[in-house]
Length: 411
Image (cartoon, rainbow, N blue to C red; front, side):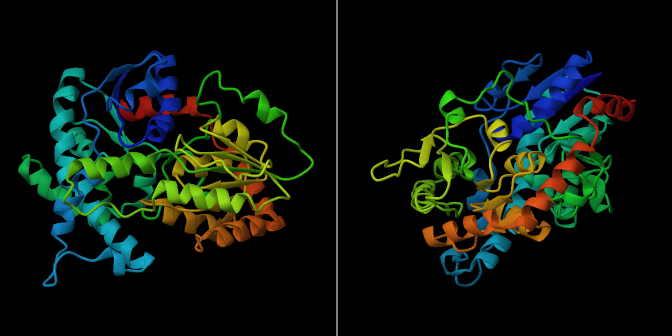
């Protein structure tokens, strides 16, 4: 069987696909990953082929023209005057239009020649790649989205009109079924009871893998941290600075994708965590420069470390709310305080609070962050729900069982 993966966005998207790609390759199937030059290293150590046939694009690349279409008599919408709910609704509407319109067209044009040459039996696509929905229809093969925040966020009813327009352009039949975007379902790594998908049904659920990075170990200094107090891990993620840079490079005159400045966010996080004197804190900065003057000794700064390993031993995760981090927290029964930044993260934060797995931080000042952290640390009910989520995760079939499932799907 030949399986084509498509991977976009940040390295976390590739990390979500690695367990599936490894399982398929280990079973003797031929795997080709079509991705960007930035993401290619994610797959470099694995027994898969990599084709860097995609530009380093993201929804931000197409944001300017899409925002211009939202303009009314008074001009483009002024996001600075919107509250968070209005801003998120606008962004979701615009990004949905981008992903199912110009970005899908760009991806279809770039990937179709690769697919025709490779002749896959199955496509496992990035959640942001809607162009491969049409490639699968052209080739007459199944396709499924792999775990991503994008798949969780899209409303298929909003996607359908734009995809149908693209279908008609390519001589394909239009569909009246919104779920034609996932005709064979989707792949997830969380159980139905803890699903983060807002509009799509659960189809194929497998156990979240904790050893994505082969050979990963925690640095020795982490093992020497005091254990007589709560251990808090905080991380800002890697996608935020990447997306900001892409938006600026795409069109300097276009409206930038609104999101907090990662430097300011990190500075506020340091201020908040410095007040958690009763805890030991590890903060992963993602390589963003940090002023270390005045940082107290209970706060330990590092560029990055193996997150899934550390989460097995921490009492609280202060996270930006990316879907990879959410899943890793569920897998390790780690309560969360979620400080969302952009994209699907506000929705993830709200879902975390709805499920009782932690708290959505809405007061983003240092005072608000530290108060939320202390609230979650003191919440026995939250820890109980996190343990329940972990048990549900462990009851899912392991990732290797996806191979026979996908073999049957591909015929």
